[in-house]
Image (cartoon, rainbow, N blue to C red; front, side, top):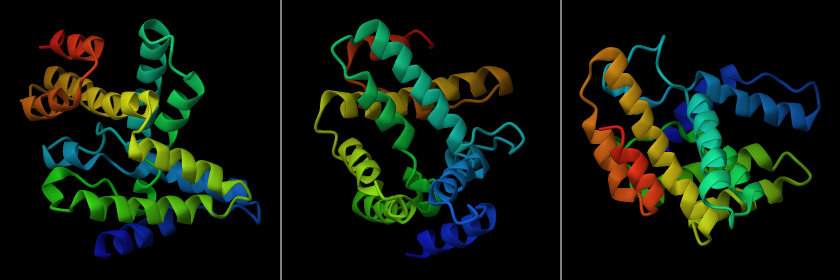
Length: 195
């Protein structure tokens, strides 16, 4: 609970009021992800002035997913692909960017992020719709959600590749982590192509 409360206090300072409009209030909460840096990069010594934010990651993952789905997976429901990708980090608004070295169990991480997603979307009259989309992604019971789970890791590996070449760092552990999750051949091939 401590992580959630810390992020909630931090983000309450970043979130602007929506002047009574709940859509604006939710928008400003989501916008706060621009100011939440990806913690794995910071822990590897990436300076904040060039560190990827959670919003940067979400945008890049969404574009990567869209491009790859259109080119290689015509059977996918593109609306679901985009929805899952756009909502997959919403829980970090109040739960923070939890990394494997934070020693938080998957169940605890899910609970923290679920609470945050509900806090954000319950303000809207159709909030259950967005919560359901996030839950579908988390459960990964359809091909689009499974795809976005892989894209999430592939984007991380591509960002590691970028940092390695721009900053002369060794970030192979991020690429190795992604490799363990990728099941689609084209995604594996893309990862192999950046070695």
